Image (cartoon, rainbow, N blue to C red; front, side):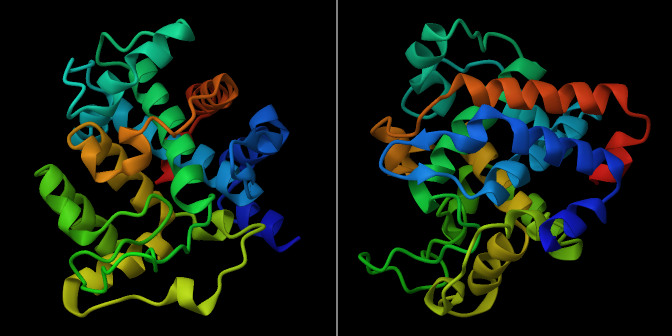
Amino acid sequence: MKAAAAASSFGPVVGQIVALAAASPIADFDWKNRGVAPIGYIKGMAVTYGRVYCKFLADDVAAIEMAKADTRAPAVDALSLYTPEFQALGWSNETTSADTLRHLFVLLIGLGMRESSGQYCEGRDYSADNEDGETAEAGLFQVSFNARSMSPLLPPLFATYQVTPSGFVEIFKEDVHCKPKMLKNWGTGTGKEFQQLTKEAPAFAAEFAAVGLRNKLAHWGPIKRKEAQVIRDCDTMLRGVQDIVDSSAGACEALR
């Protein structure tokens, strides 16, 4: 009931997207070595995609960077590295387009399951010695503050979310149980603030990682090893999100 109330508080458009995600086959998908995702993760990523799709329609520079055509640089660009997997599904990323943006988010959803099992509040990897504010990883996609060097678009994105940290955490929380050690943030200063923001505003974590995947895939071991799954049902769900946005007056205002 709390989760339903949280979604409804954002208005009917978000409610439609959340309902679409809950009914999607991807909500029950058994991810390799991870199991079924927390429903809050699937709902949260669907709503986050709606926000980013709106930003793409508005020519937001970060969203355009996410949606840019395949750079054919498989050592740098995650979409280039995953070209065989996309082609096997009949998908093309040859143009800067909503299709390319959507395919990136399909990959991003798979990455989040590898890195955090879809838990928005995941903290640093305790098997690694990364307790400094610059290097301690955090959030759905296990990103550290030093990753901001991947693109000049990332520091402004961080600054924007610091001012307005609205990241749909109320939706991402559903079916997730955060332990104290997950919530702990390491180091001091801005790096510690970055860790906190990735957990308090999961949509920020998603946007930050999405830009990063197009510019320095080496930050993510599961991408380099091609462990992040690309699932057609994710694409189907995200297409449905686009349809809701395209057909609903005021949708983008509701998703801001």
